[in-house]
Length: 315
Length: 130
Figure (cartoon, chains in turn brown, orange):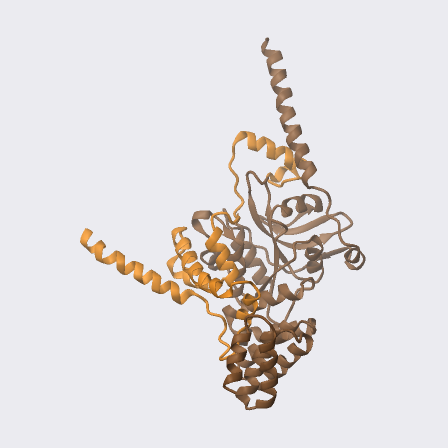
C-alpha cells in the first residue's frame, strides 16, 4: 500500500466516524424549539430587559458572576467577590444548582425554578424578569457546564440575548441555545423579592419556593409572598394554609383563623388545615367550632388523625 | 505532637458533630400548629424518617463541602440556606451534580468532534465558530 492510498483510507475512515457521530447527534436534538400555540399567540415578537448589569466571569466562576447579575438586577447590592466564597466549590471548580438557589435566598430574594420549557423562559423575559439558565456548552460525554443570564430574545431572527461568560449581550440562535440548554433538562430560575411571582409559574412550584424561603428567612420576610400567592391562586388551599401559619407565628391569631377557614373552604379534604384551624380556635376559646374542625381532621384518613384525636380528648 | 493529636481529634470530631446539628434548619416554628414545611413534606410518604434523614444530610453536606475546599467560616450559612430537598440532593449526589464551570478536557479527538458539532450548531465551545 502506498503512503498516499493509506492516507486516503485514513481520511475516509475518519470522515466516516465524524459523519456518523454527527448524524447521531442530529437525530437527538437541535431543532428550533417550538412554542405552544397559546404562547405563540400572546408572546411579544421580541423583548429585551434593559439595565441588567454585566459581570464578566473569571476562570470557572460563571456561577458567582451570573448570580451577581441576577441579584444586582433586582437591586441587591452584592459583588462577585462576596459571592465566590458563598457559592463556589473550589475542588469542583464550579457551582452546583442547589447552592445557586440557596445563595439567592441568603440575599433576600426567592428563587423560583421554572418548568423546563422554552415557553416559560421567553414568557419570563417578556415579563421583564432576567433568567439564570444552565447550559452544557459541549457534548454529554465531555460536559462543559455553564451558567448564563438570559435577558432578551427575538422571535423574528430566532435569537436569544444572554449575558454569558466574558460577553455581554451575546447573541445565540434559538437552535444552538436550546441544544445546549436541553442538556441540563432546561434548568432555569428567576429571583424575585417576596411579593412578586414569576409570570409562568404554577401554584405548587411557587408554594415550594416560598416555603423554602420562609425556612431560611422567617415568616415575617415570607408574609408578602404568601399574600401574593393566595391572590394569584385563590383556589389553592395549601396557599391559604401557609398564609395562616405565617400569620400565626407572627401573632396574628384572627388573621390565621381567617386563612385556615379559606383553606378548608377551597379544599374540605385538607386535614392539616382543619387541624390547624381547630387548634387555633381551641386556643382562642372557641370550643364549639374548634370541636367541629378537629372532628373533621380526625375523620379524614391520613397522618393528622392522631394529633386531631389527641386534641379532641383535651377538649 | 502525636499525643496532642490523640486528644485533639476526638474533640474536633465532637465539635464538628455539634456544629452540624445546629446547622439543621428547623421548619419555621408554628407554635403548637403544624408548620407549612411539615405539611408539605408530609405529602411524601414516610415523613418522619425523612426528617431524620434530612438532619443527617445537612451534617453530611457540611462535611463534603469542607472536604471540597469551602471556607469554614462560610459553610454553616451555606448549608443553612439549602431547602430540605436540596440538602438531600447535595448529600446523596454532590459528586454527580453538574457544576457550572466552563472547562473541557482538550484531547485532540474531542477537539475535532466538538469543532464539528459547534459548526453544526449543536454545541457552543469555540467562540470563533459562530
